[in-house]
Length: 133
Image (cartoon, rainbow, N blue to C red; front, side, top):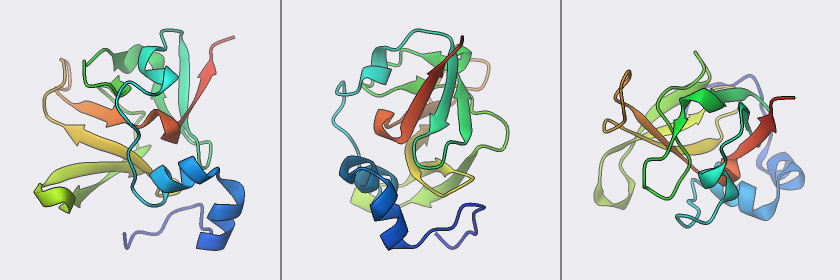
């Protein structure tokens, strides 16, 4: 990515502050196994943050069960998720990453529910849930 983000850290700084699994997903564009993360079935009200930098990304009222095995949302908080074209694995997809720090979150597909028609298919590892008090 050639974009400049508010949160700028060297690779060494990211490795020192993130768990090995979060580093693999957020900085190396990894993917967790489907149905492996607890946030896939999370139903409480609250806010989902970027696990790498803490930026707010999604509200719980935009989360839905997509059947994909990953936490899915139909809308991100305005300006929180940036997009790039991902041509890896022999396909063309839209990658979602944190607009604040550039962490890889997952992918965006055009098969979501109304009102947006978008499915933000996110790695639970890249998220940190804050339940509403």
